[in-house]
Length: 181
View 1 (tube, rainbow, N blue to C red):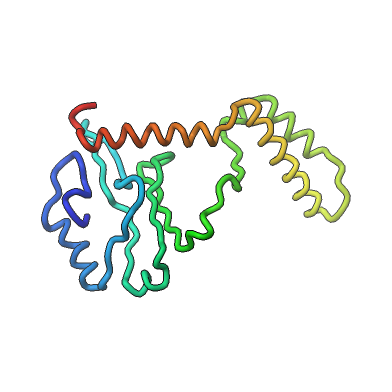
View 2 (tube, rainbow, N blue to C red):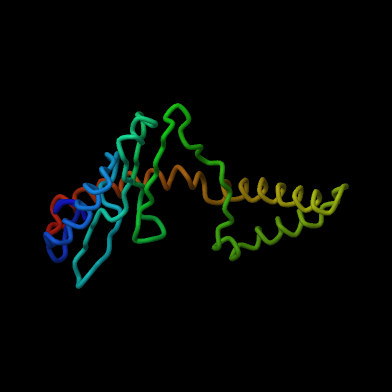
């Protein structure tokens, strides 16, 4: 912890706790990089009280800033963990690509249609070497499952982004006044 404002809720931080990181930064001639978006990267309910802390951070030295003067640090949302991800972009001319990953959702196994799609595509006749055939079948599964998902659930990604924006508003209100839920 760098400063007392890096924590909201729970037991108050001690001076010794803030001193450790400050001493480290001074010794290494480093600094905590400016963050855009969420301030806190960790949250948990401890003894019935919601606690937010800035545990995860990007630390820079001056020579790094000279190499990457237009860096951008963004703290993401709390999705699958009590930690939010921290994203460092050192090349703003080339922002991170969005929507390029495909993830099979564990809950899809409960839908009979996904079994049909996978079975149909795995039985496809593809000519070529065995690895080529496997890759082509996987690609076809990816396309068909993405299409099925969009038809079944709508644009899941945009719904998540909208909900993430709403969650940020609620989290900001909680951080500003933790005793007024």
